[in-house]
Length: 174
Image (cartoon, rainbow, N blue to C red; front, top):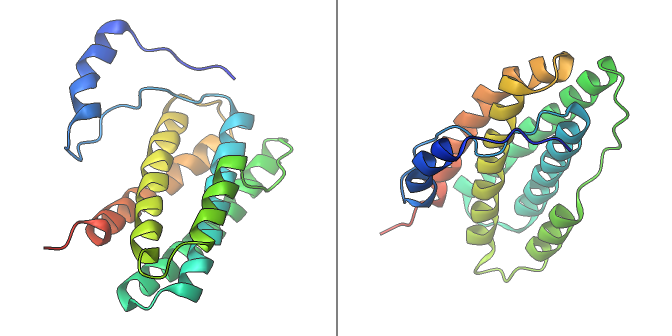
């Protein structure tokens, strides 16, 4: 896996943003530019979104969370299909599966206590979509040229919109 290193000065400038409570989005600190690596990570994340949202649809009693889970489920299924098609166009062999980390997170979610389920689901979705936005931003900007890079750029605006939705839902209620 090749990572595009950032200059020390850029890292130091980004550090306050990375550790602040701000939701400001700066440039990704690490960019995955290898198409095979990107595709594996992106497909794993999308499949986790499908699995977690199917679990949420079975377990949540909150209609707002249910509507969000249905939207995530639909979007992540489409994302998986588009990524697989783009990888095929770029002649990249991709096996659609979750990473061990995503598998473990899905298992934890399935076993979550009913009272904590919605919070755990939303926190997981917020973290995953934040990771996805960073992953897609970097690859769409600096990744290997081809259908996968084009697809990453096309999917990014929808991910940013989803990021805003999950942040609103996952915000502490007071």
